[in-house]
Length: 421
Ligand SMILES: *Cc1c(COP(=O)(O)O)cnc(C)c1O
Image (cartoon, rainbow, N blue to C red; front, side, top):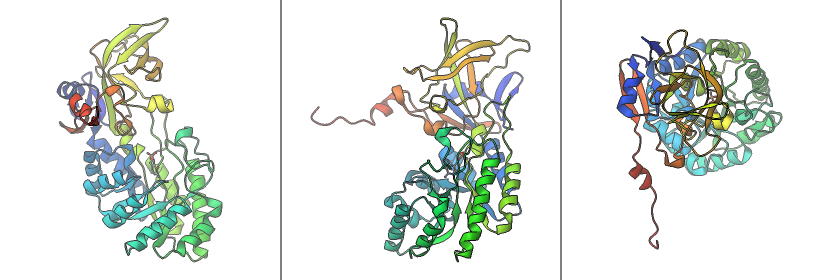
């Protein structure tokens, strides 16, 4: 459930009609709902009630400072994957001991910054990285808390570009080598091995791949404990999917995921961490765009929007589906039109949907892309010198711009001309 609903025929974000925001900030823009972000964090937190746990929001899904501050205020932890994200977490008010650092290529500078600023744990992904962190920690006179990410070799049954738990993927160490690598880590004086980490992919719509991976983690926990390792924390990653096509998708709910986690891992008495990104932010955001033209082609009509692939790249990059709805609700009984829905960028890949049935709209009308709160704004670019679009946060009947649209001059003046020109 989210908080983007039609009221009196007009799509609202909580209590704010979207045309009012469009009037104030222009189109296209992203719009996020405070109530939905809050609700989704709480669903996970409640799903793990009864076990010691921390929900660490994976900020790569949506790292706007206002979103982070809201989520920090709910008591969440946070998962970061770069020095920049670490700096964002600190700036948004996350305490160091609530920040988990993931990622396959952490640099020594990133390690140093996190050790100095405070860190809950590093999730290590390789032996070279382990040795580097050990050296950095010792050079600072610190001991780095770590888990090691294991690759359980399970098929997450998701899009190939967001599957991470097969042996051919670049992530983690093969679970078959875990015993050996944990022994090496335990011998390093700069590291404190606190647990095990696993993350098998994103947009999973079935619990079984998670359960398969977590059963392997349970077994590994017992093996490592028998070897004398004090395994006390399990980081289970993120990845629970959301319904992008509402009319025919119903992925598992956080409460079902939580019940499975407790069943598979509850007996181990470990602290549980999870790192959801998409499920917290995805349905908490929409992208609102204006129709520029409707163009008739050969046997098809193109709906040309002012949003493009640089604003929302998921359809071009992953072939992703987004529901696209008119902001002014069609009257009951209106016959559907069929469009190829495209943006103005000079690439055929700039296509949001082909042969999509939706109520007819025309120039000047507004449409909303649903489920655009995760991997939307964060993946956008200024390709074609199209300014990054504004982000707006709604709270009940209030709204605020949380990232403004830059002017053309601001964009141009970021470049500098060498003096010989
Ligand atoms: C991307 C990522 C997540 C979040 O994945 P979602 O599908 O957005 O929940 C969590 N942990 C790690 C290590 C990731 O790379």
